[in-house]
Length: 246
Image 1 (cartoon, rainbow, N blue to C red):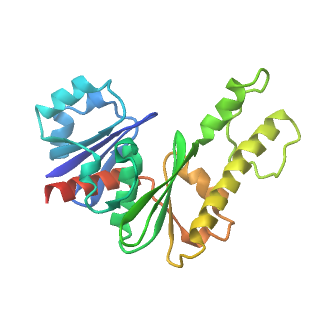
Image 2 (cartoon, rainbow, N blue to C red):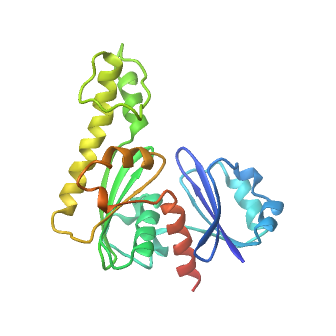
């Protein structure tokens, strides 16, 4: 029977259906309320794992539990990695699931996971599964919105995939230069700091802005190391529930 994986994050609810390791369905737009008996029967779902940072889906979760066994992802399920985070109770579940996914997909390899979501997170898991932590910085949209929110006159500006100048020639493009070039330099700086002594490094991009980040790095010296895994967190959650049930 298939596994239902649900990741309820800050911005999106992401769902996936796995048959063992095979991802057979994924969606970022299906409301939890629509994941009912008909949906479960369609994919022959036998159990579910939920990772959530919100409390507003409790009624749906209660209904789901009446239909199939439900497991809530937690730090105790990270059996495939050695978690050295000083405060494991404060570690974001999405970060933990991402490093589990990296370790599962690329065993025996050092991996730097860069998750471009509401925040940008950088997390390192080594070839033997040791995880010590990483870094958290403001995400792409957060940076754009903060410039408007914390100033009197700066406008809201959206990202532009085609922007490739080092500087702007008006306020809008100056903001775009600061935000997008700032992220590009940040990405390169973090990668350089990790890659110095690692010859078999994987740089794994995931999250809603991963394709954009990939475009920022495509001409860098690090391009050969980059792997785009848009479903890394979902794959990590699936790996965790398989390990939990073995």
